[in-house]
Image 1 (cartoon, rainbow, N blue to C red):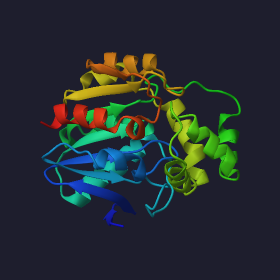
Image 2: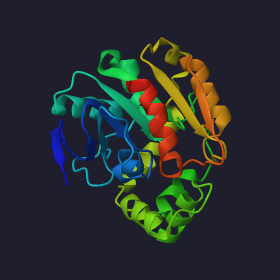
Image 3: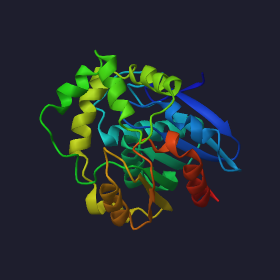
Image 4: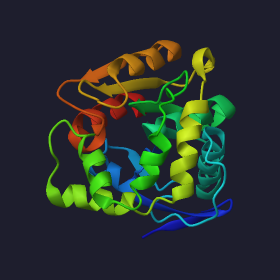
Length: 253
């Protein structure tokens, strides 16, 4: 399993293809594995690297505050470690927030943005008990499995789901709890209109977590199209990998 030293991390990643650099950033409770179906269907002329974020998967290194800006700095460190001045970025859920934050903080590092089910641009609504429930999933695999199953509009294959849950169980409790705060605090709003790189937003018609309406709000702020994929939930990459690959091709071509 390849790793690269980036800042204070040894970042684990999956790699496929040859050509223009593409970096894929997963969501909360995720890992690079979420992008495996996309890596198997990459457009010609791109090399994709799907990374494990800090505190997740097989990436090694200390905790930090797990804010969107701090995670974006980790992403910038990965680009530096790979020797890239810029790259095309694909982010899912939390990962879409990370790539958007990097585009705000260091626009010169971003060639294009593909935002899959991006998080709330005015902050995740606060719900009492969410942090405690999230923490409990570390101790109860059945709860985590049920929560992850709900992200799919159609039940995934048992082996596929088990592998995703295996990776999710590697997430550190510190990352879990801090991410709730990070999503509540992240409020880029109208500042997204300053992003000029080619960009696209994609949402699942049946997403139970981040609705197409929230995705459309992000697209409106970005001034870009919002593609709504019919019959798809929050798990956009496993459920519709070819559609995602086709949209990616329009950004990197």
